[in-house]
Length: 217
Ligand SMILES: *Cc1c(COP(=O)(O)O)cnc(C)c1O
Picture 1 (tube, rainbow, N blue to C red):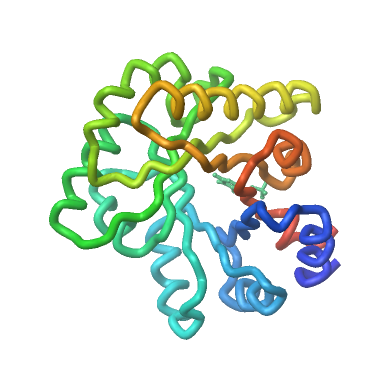
Picture 2 (tube, protein in one colour):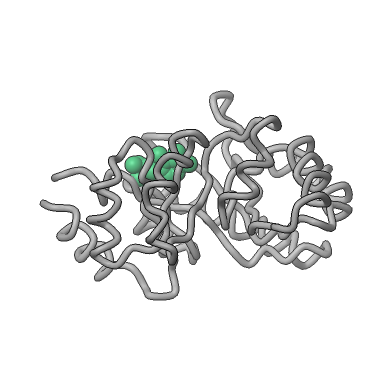
């Protein structure tokens, strides 16, 4: 399967309301162009330096929306704010407050998702739902941030029913927070190559696909 065939198949499975994001980390600029030519306009990267190099080479492709999905260190925050439309991986209060502070000095404010881990997983970054509730007051004070939704990465090797359960919990959490705070979490960034069809059943609004797009099957 070529990239274009992968994309055609995926587009036929995904409602048009769901934003299909191609995770192009470790993929060449040529492959990104191939995906672009098949209709993809959203690309995600997890390393700043690699992303900046690709963005430079793809300058003419000015209708691409770039998404940052990697763990973000505070010393790189300014560059990420300036070069991405979306940051999916805001994973701590400290980072959120840091972003809020530097946005005062620059004139951009990308869309932000708060990264949550619905099942405890020491190898992953993000808020537990408990911790997120505790930090809500402080997050609401970050007035410069455009907080639009929640992002989650599920542990590998869950059964389908476990994945559905976890996605449902993310959805419920976003709804509860929207009802009980001043945040409006209308976006859900959940679903990767191995579980995106399940995420769509649980009303995700964005899916982040790497292998399903770029690997031949
Ligand atoms: C790599 C990555 C993806 C894509 O994973 P695939 O299994 O290749 O679809 C999605 N989200 C994040 C945060 C990633 O790091």
